[in-house]
Image (cartoon, rainbow, N blue to C red; front, top):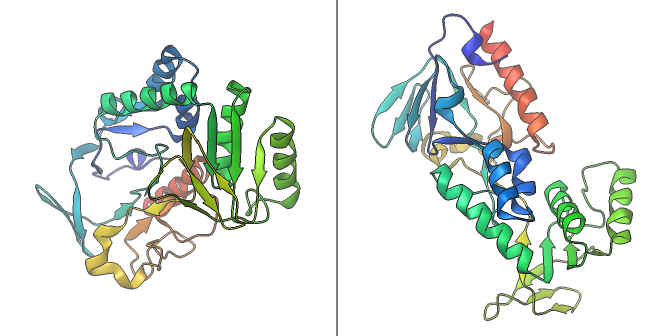
Length: 281
């Protein structure tokens, strides 16, 4: 259930973007074979908050800092009884964007899918679920391209069952993808089209590189008052009910939590239901 459905709650959503981005549709949009396909997917991908919110107040602003009782924005201060932190994460590549306007984000996706279509040699660095899904989308839509997938671990999607990892690698290789494991990658400082692998290999003349090496949680606004419950990676430590450690009225969900799990849309829905039910009580 959503917090809007809980009787008696006055809910406020604060976001530095005007829209919700459906993460499930991002990779299909990035790998669209035409501008028309990008636009079609974009309509499902980017949804302005005002279009789906009913009783919830929406504030388009940036969060500067948080205390145990208030949220300080650039333009106002909000006091709360309950706080839910779900500020997501940042990515090194175009898979996630800090673009504020949906029109700008849509243009970014179209520009990136166009450059992918023109690319002949593609390297994806990072063999987690995002990297594997991205390579799968590319090789399915553009089987003629030279595609490499590189990961520092000995298995793709290391947190998945070994059988799943090996099946994924076998299928990708059957489609012509070069899967390179147990290798770390650095990019040339003078030539962005060249990568160095720590096994001594060089990959040159790359037309497009996607960095799928993990996310950085968007929790810098917690540093001033909550640094004691942030991990070294910036994730928020929570208990089994997703309450921030030491604070019964503050919750965290999604990519910002320290839980060791795949940060998928499915898990975000589980987090949402758990928090809503707890607040309802």
